[in-house]
Image (tube, rainbow, N blue to C red; front, top):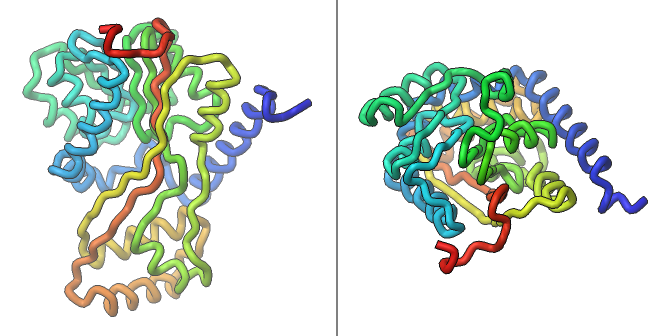
Length: 297
């Protein structure tokens, strides 16, 4: 059988890939639901600064260009973080259920949504993976289910759980390649003895299975970057986290190599990092499955 057209083959391949990713995270001591705890304040600042707001507007603009109208829409925002999308959804008149598991991010989410009237934003401080959507009454309960760069998607079964909650639309964004990081590109050859190479990621599984299973959807893959500035200590910790996540030694030798490089390359103590990569976005249409044009308004 030609495996290109075999749904079961692609489901199993993605499942095995997801299990390998989960195993690497566990070995590295990474708990996805709590991975942003220590970075919550920085992430919040980056989400709501000028550059972050431009990124958010581009994504919302793409959705609106596909006919999504937020006024009066019920939205399930999975992995809401500090409200980078929950806030603009509510500002546009949507009723938002925001799922976020990181306590520091939940606290920031509460602060950022306090300005909205009661009922506009409902915060669910739980990991989505542990929620029984059917028992919670979430089956087809939301006009739009929105999942942006959230590690809840590891296989096709997790996609089905997300789609089950949606009535009209389901939006999913995820990396289309491994993350690009200018500092990692500088340091990797010194520590690992080889260049830092990006690889295709799970977006390929998602798009292919949506196609094989007969869904109607629009998708786009684009390259997005942002620039951040951090202290030497923050840059050192970030690089050690990256080494651990990619299976590289996180020992005293590696730490010393990274520290010496930062001292030499960034004598001011401030490190400017360009990070980003290729990202995929898909909008799944569950009701009106025709191609949207402005005439459909």
